[in-house]
Each structure stands twice: as C-alpha cells, then as structure tokens.
Length: 189
Image (cartoon, rainbow, N blue to C red):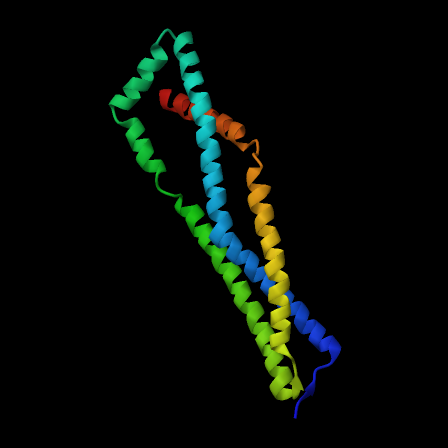
C-alpha cells in the first residue's frame, strides 16, 4: 500500500501544476484570441489613420503642385503600379509567418515539456517511491483557480486592453512617407 507523499512534495507538484496550467492557458489564449485581435487592431488603426490623412495630404499636395500630383498618381494608376503594389502587399510576409510559426512551436513544446516533467515526477513518486499523490484533487483545485483567473484575464483584455489606442499609426504613416520619399528619390536619380 502506498503512503501519502510528504506535504512539501505535494506542494512542489502543486506549484508545477500551477505553472503548467497557467502557461498552457496563456499560450492557447494568445494563439487563439490575442494574435487575431492584435492583427485586426493594427489593421484597423492603420486603415483609419491612412483614410483620415491621405485624402487631406493628397488634396494639399495637389493644390501646392498645381495639379501635377494628381496627374502623377493617375499616371501610376494607369500603368498598373498601384495594382501591382496591392497584389504584392496582400500576401503575408514569409519571414514574419515563419517567425510566428517558430514562436508557436516553441510555446507548445514548452507546454509539452512541462507536462512531461510533471508526469515523470508523479510516475517516479507513485511507482518507484510508492508514494500516493492525490492528483485529481490537485488538478481540480488548479483548474478552478485558473478558470476564475482566466475569466478575469479575458474580461480585462476585452474590456480594457483592447480599448487602448497606441500612437503607432501616426509613427507608421511617417515611416511610410519617409520610405516612399527615399524610394521615389532613388528611382528618379
């Protein structure tokens, strides 16, 4: 008959379970929810910034160049440059896609490694040391605690974090204009 594991041993297993459940929840939440919301938020912010600023910038540029700016944009459009840019930028950057895939694989591998450490530890206690660990009770406690913590995190994220609007779009617009100027000057020379 197996004797109960020492309180410090159960405490150690409980800590490992806490880390495993929290880390797994955060990985799944990030992969399933946050990545999509971040992508949508950035897209929305950039689109809003471009929509509100480009019309004004184009009108201002056209007035200061006596219509030459409008003619230049129409010339770019007539030769299909804008269509080619649309096609080129509609495909995700392969380097980013590969980096994100690697990040997800690393996070999932860490979850699996944590699980294997816990399983090995419990197996060693149960079979080799003949100590009884009340694993279902530990799991139940961890899932209840992290279910409630997860609910609070989700509510916080949806109610507060998603409402935050960073100053990135204006910085991004300046970067777009700077890059455009650099490449236009390079092409003109």
